[in-house]
Length: 240
View 1: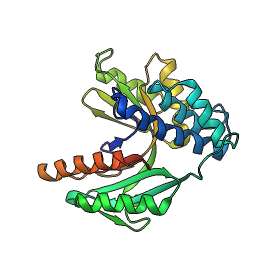
View 2: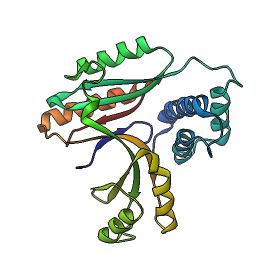
View 3: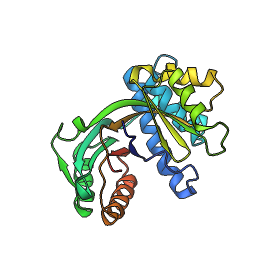
View 4: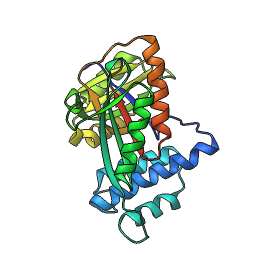
């Protein structure tokens, strides 16, 4: 596996300015509410909720916001009728894109995303037209920018902890797992003294695609425009 290009919308700006924070908290609240509605309000028995709460905490989302989102999810507070959506598309240079979102109006979200794609040389495809190019994986992100450990030692620890595969982005290591083994591998790494920056369930491309510099610039604008859409949670592509 050659790594993945994951434009993580709600997590990609750790230093988000104040005007962005409200949008980020809103997206995180939706993520928590949907997770709580599906499998209950206890993170100990609801892995999806546990991941959502970890994301929220990484953004210093106040505890009361998290608690309200859980209460909305289990029906204790009034909530819009939220549903998860997944759109598949081609982008500039023929890259494959998966867009995950949460919305209270699927038709509206579909129309908005279609309009954004069209503006930036992209187009929607029917369900299943893109997804076969990706695999669902657990991803554990480790930041080694401070050179706390040499790369070879960190790779060995990741493999010993149960990693299926690993991939470096400069000094950032992505550790891939089977989805059902994500929590176990994370725990193994932490027990070995490794600091985890982020855990998530991602769509990882089976192969990466090289495109021109001009198309890369358009892709960046496309991803940023999608990121601004309220319904969009995560964007994945096979761009190299």
